[in-house]
Length: 205
Image (cartoon, rainbow, N blue to C red):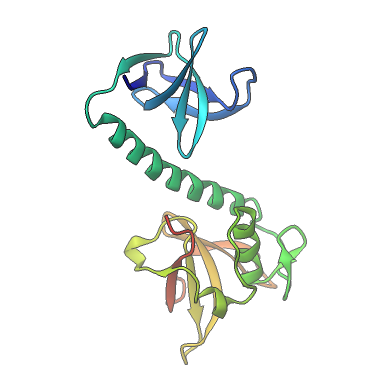
């Protein structure tokens, strides 16, 4: 049969490897995971987001045979949580550079970036390739509405003639992070501090 494991402890660490203490993810009570393999000694290999991890079941979780349709639902939830997890990782990575310097033409947030150099470098860290120009970045991905925005989406601003000249990254809660200017460097602003010309999802999940 097919089995699922449901966390009963308040929280439990799922490790990257059975023989190491490197944590992949901290699961909360009530979380259910598809069991991929019984490794013995109280360890279960489970599916976590879009990868696999090792859950110490003893005193932390219960294992039961999956009900009809339950695995499909768990897999769907895993895909969705994987997408939001990746987007949050992307936003968290970008936030470490708040206060960093602005440099026209720069593409390294440690030493200085312009607006498109910042979004390009952050996306590159997660395997997403973008050109180093806001107007070209606006041509990538899928155009979305402001009501559809999720962390990692790109917001483009422009001049009165409708020419795009600035890009920022949405980080959630109505906020963006962007390399704003030489004076302020990399900073957090409200997403609508200027009227956006276009919003794009370049992550695509």
